[in-house]
Amino acid sequence: MNKLATSGLALALASMVVGCAPRYADVPAPTRFENTKQQKLQAAEHWRNIAEHFASQLASDLNGKLNGRAVYVPTPDGEQPFVQGFRELLITSLMAQGLPVSTEARNSLVVDVRYAIYRFQPNRAQSTYYYGDVTAVATGLWAVSAVAAAEISSSASISAGAKLLATAAGLEGFGWLSQEALGRGQYASGPVPRSEILLTAAVADGTRFVSRRTNIYYTVDEDRELYWNQTSRSHNISVVGDCGERTQTCAR
Image (cartoon, rainbow, N blue to C red; front, side, top):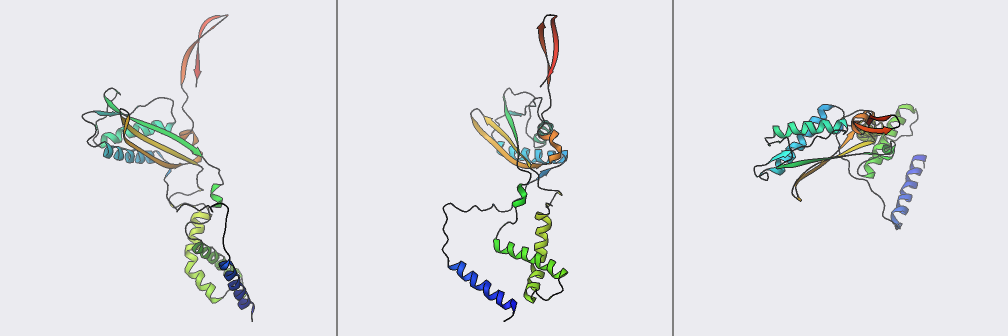
């Protein structure tokens, strides 16, 4: 019996033993979420796109609920450049949707924009090896190994069946390697960002929400000054000392 047949028999026996063994655990085994897509903000044009998306959602929610009133979007100072830009773009987008927009909060429904940014571990993507069924992924990964071995090995250790499987699954395996293992996403190059934005726009009528929308986005880690550095604000304060009263400018 050759080595290939011997290893195949050993693998089959091991599979039978594992298959018959009962499985018990003190805690549930963690599983992964299914693969999803998340937009990555890289330009002011993307800010406009998400403002238009929010505006269309709010317009749909507020249809028939304004009762002759307008909406008002506050634009306070000292926020992150992204938040300031998003508010301005949201006003323009709401008007484009045909909603009446007021310059003051009186007799208006206020659009409350809330913003939070979260930073995860930079190496969190290193353990993301697969999405979906384990068997399919194991096949794809083995197929990648088989193709690489076939290119560098001069021996006949890889069976015809393995080469056929590598041909069938190689494209999927190398696709996974390019998209996930090497950190290249579907729509943006580079590694998975560690910073994510949670952006909410809500409208309340008295004590009752009439619209509330929340979306999540990736941000480019190199653009921190746009997303999580707040714009400094200055104000004058009076300081009284031995030399008399003087005015001092402070930034916060």
